[in-house]
Length: 250
Image 1: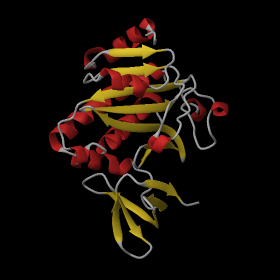
Image 2: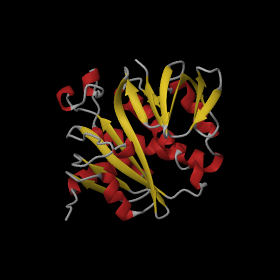
Image 3: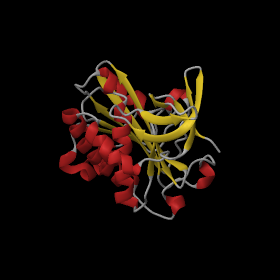
């Protein structure tokens, strides 16, 4: 049975202040904040952990979650169409970039569809899962994690020479997320798109895209009105991609 950490919860409640929209569940260690969040299903609830034993990313990948990071899940119950739910990964990406910039004075970039990069390396990852009318948005940010505890393709706030308290960063991101979530709920993706475009990685870069059993190569150029990645293929055709796998060519 999981034991909640009352001291961590008290610190988070204080950091969130009047912006808190649901209960806070904090743990020293969990298998995955996503799994815990799915059992709660309360709008606005926040599940936070110092360490995840089985943190996960998109397509079944493992998200390394040693102590020193901010690992948490936020629960929402959106009224928008199911086809629009994947856009929440980009809403959370925008919130993460803004919160990191505000807390650590860094300038991260959002890589479609669910990563936040710093100097080309992964600083944060985002995962969305819908179940039983709720959507859980999972966020993992490498805060004070040492480079030795991270893959070569990842970095952390500390590795960039900055400092930021994981709990305060979580509170900032939570506030930013719900600010943009309310905009998205009322107005759709268009305002999110406009705020995201100057902060996006990939634009102007050659990308290799795997979508199902097909592979494509072209230059990423924009986000469309539905949050899809717009790519000009080598054939000259412009195509929009859903949440397929996107990797940069070396």
